[in-house]
Image (cartoon, rainbow, N blue to C red; front, side, top):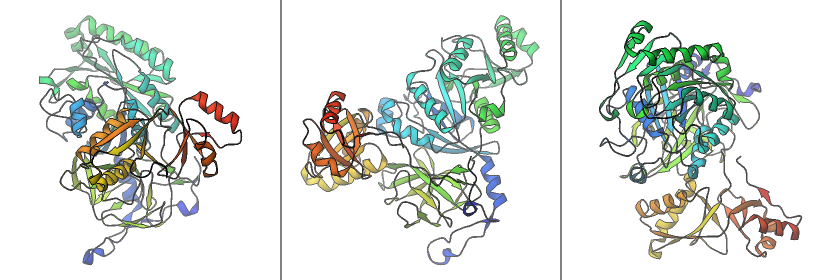
Length: 554
């Protein structure tokens, strides 16, 4: 890791900004470096990643239940009569899937947990990847019957690239599935990580009795609850008591655990943080089995916030003056006010509501008078926050995804991923008298990253082109235009499949090619759209010097 420059080193105190507004604008008391380091060490910020339908939102709900942040667990499908707090959008509730990421903060033991639920569907990969830039660890959720699926492997690759330590949870063990040892082999063969189970199931998939805690040999027996709405009682037994109660199931579990020990599959903190091993837990999120153990593991082994790399090649220490970056924008959470919320991950220093910070992109000040702590859709005022926390900044019309905010010493963090779109559609307002609502909605969807918005002088502002990684993004955009912005739209699909970056001097020549169109994205990039790879090859042969570069995640 590169060493920080002298300018990045922290002072003896962490600078605080004056609050805004009258008598309240007096400078707040200085916060010591020790305070920031202590508070940062209590933070655990992580995301849950998985293939769709692996139980991600259900696990998120179960974690909040066990931390006593909620009284009763809901279900993504609403079968318990209560919905999950993370799936708050009406479209999510109607379909039973996560469409947008959601942040929840709660305390457990002496730790402050910042949990970010992510969309599992591949069409919303950009949202998930941005979330992974804002966390310090990830929980990889694996369906016991299906093993490692395609989207899980894609997200694992991102975690590996970013150096994010992974904790693996084998979910749905209350249902028939693969053999436990077979799953361990699959994890190692496909990810290269050595699985180091902390718990081991007693009973095969579909006959879940409980788990062996491999750290102390105890048996933790589970009892089902009504629909998994409440915390499942746990009964702790000695090995002798477990053998008497479970018989052959206990014997098999302990023999397999001994086999793992002989092969060196025991947890090692150093190799875990280095991304070489992954602790493994078995459970059932829908039945609240094994969730308590996961919370304990997160507190005990997951890393706390660390110095973060900057675009200059240095690192910003957590005790340096305040800095954060925006990883998500969201509107429509408060139906009464229609405000726009910027989710900011704090990287260093202390956040104090009312402080005036600087946007690295624009160089302009941004007042944080309206700052909130987010729990799904619910929001409360937050006065202080520390590295690892996620803060919601209200009415952040001048902020964009990827913006760095800082106090005192200038800093800028690397840009967030932007993906090459593969689906394109022209959006038009059904009612031209609602043009203002239409324009506002298009601008908002682009700012949030729901879709990429492309424009050209030929098409005009009345017919922007939406570009998406997956077609479901179009459905979300169409639904939100009608329900949030009161401007129903039509979407006409275009036959383009490939987007390549180009430069302004090639616009006219590329537009003159059959089946090619150049449009400008809101970040200023010019994208040349092609119907297929054959057309790309043909144009490159005709214009060998033309700038046509692949769009890759930045």
